[in-house]
Length: 50
Image (tube, rainbow, N blue to C red; front, side):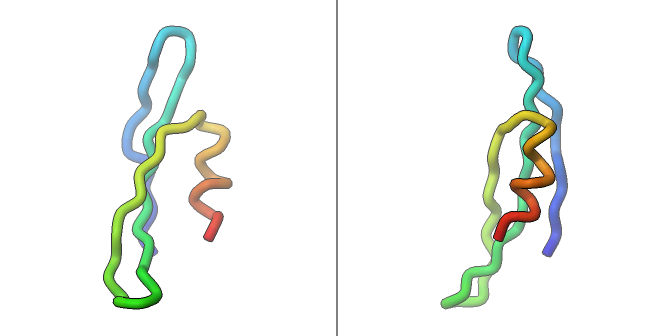
């Protein structure tokens, strides 16, 4: 499973990170990409979550 943090975004005083991960569909076996924007501290927890 490939995972990568793509960009650091700054909006006002908050620092945010956009993270993208590949998720394999259990029915078809195809991969889809899931994107989320969050704080840099939450990225590792989000990527490790199944």
